[in-house]
Length: 232
Image (cartoon, rainbow, N blue to C red):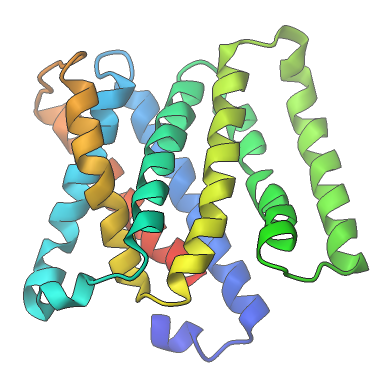
């Protein structure tokens, strides 16, 4: 698929990958919500990384460890740490708020990412993009506004996730300029795996087979999300 998409104009490619990302993230939130009554958020984060890496293990085995060599490992580690915080907060928000409101808040991420790109990556934002940013913010506020009648901790979790993952958009842009996108996606999970393992030791619940199935689905969809994001 990547070979076909690469022939398209850059703007169309970006829109395509963002559509894929939004769809995948929505599904992972649904899956996490499905098991949230029995499996802690931190444990979900651990299994998400574990199953995501299992999906990519055959890919690495075929190409060798040299295929995941990356430059600027400091940014790689920072990105993984921020992703752990952002992902955990996103799932925590999904467990405390209607998914429609969580999704509306997360859709503000590209808006803040555009502003961050202008500030830190010297990307030029012209009138049309500023107009799109303003309309996007207004649209998100229209959707979210009913929920703010009763602001709860879920809203806070959602916005912490947005800001952490927005910072990571800048990190991702820097990394994909000098590293293969799949290597960046794999290291994203490698960094998060020990963080999730340590954190979930304090809240561990042994999942049953059905819960393992949902956790595996979260891991697969998350890896697809990261691979799409690196390309986008």
